[in-house]
Length: 274
Image (tube, rainbow, N blue to C red; front, side, top):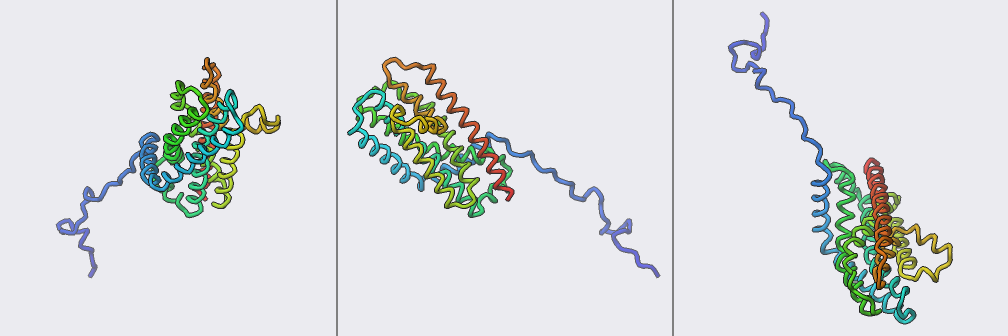
């Protein structure tokens, strides 16, 4: 006597219908860069809004305090233009470079990169979204600092609209540098230290007039990404700004921003797979 499974009997209710088997479901296409970037930007902006606003006040008051101190040794002219432009861009450096380096350093140490690695978003969207969110917090502080500096030193305010280009370009360059420092640092404490050193370099090399610096320091100043944003903004205070030089400085700042964000994206991929 042989035993035949009921599933194979033609008239059995347990017979397997080949057409009833679930079809293999293909995964959807990978998320595109722009929608992913917007999603990460909105998430970072809403998450950091409460925590970063007090730090934005600190950055603004710090820059205003520096200008008040420099008012005692600088009367006007090109030196006053350098002080106001450097103090305004310093707000961007405090948030986009210093805080972003700390954020990515802590994110890497706490395993937060694993969360982003599981999402179907390009690595560039994560870096650009976070950098854009942090740079957005610098807009009010930079504008307030620039207006206060113009009133304090008696500079014209007619060309403050150039901040529309200076803030995003300098912010991209400094945010890319800050993200790269945070992602490449082996420990979060080192990332914080590097961010602080970068902000100190932006303070010393960007606020102080360049013509009073030694030649070696001037060369180091040319390597700092924020320098070109400071130079572009400072040139607009003159009675007849040379817009060709202003556009040239902004172009250099933009190129540095692209390179620094590309390095930060590479550093994110390197840190996410470890």
